[in-house]
Image (cartoon, rainbow, N blue to C red; front, top):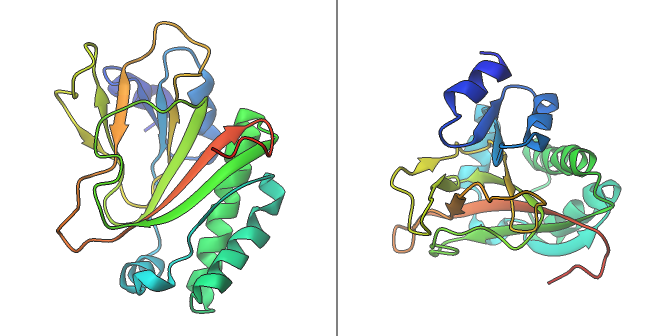
Length: 211
């Protein structure tokens, strides 16, 4: 399916679907409130991340340049004592690649990176973030849920991003009016025993943007 056809198919929800990372540039076009890179993780990597003890999952929050992401994520893995293996290298490499793609697309001098293991109903309410733009990729567990709301209420139809598929979302600081009404939330998992490993990248202007 071409990106143009994907846009037509998803016009009702304002979310483009890209089969290649270079097609994510559609996210910059007017009326495109979000974009999903449709991809599937390698089975061996997914099995590793799904069965990794959550206490060994790398976690942290830092503002940095995209070029510094590989060393920073490696350090987070070392602190968490994540097993030194090929799959760990894949995780570091993928996070680094997504950081480079997102920073290049947004022309962002810095990124706010958050890597978090989630077991509760974090961000359970549908919302729009007070940022310019954000990339979210769920490496383990259920992906981000999203939908359109024109009246401030929860969306009538809720969609879920596939595990391992990055989604780009516009925030309230995106210079476009009127707002698209595209809301998102973390899936409610509290009490299920599920652990999600979520990467969040925000485009920021300086290292002081750490809140």
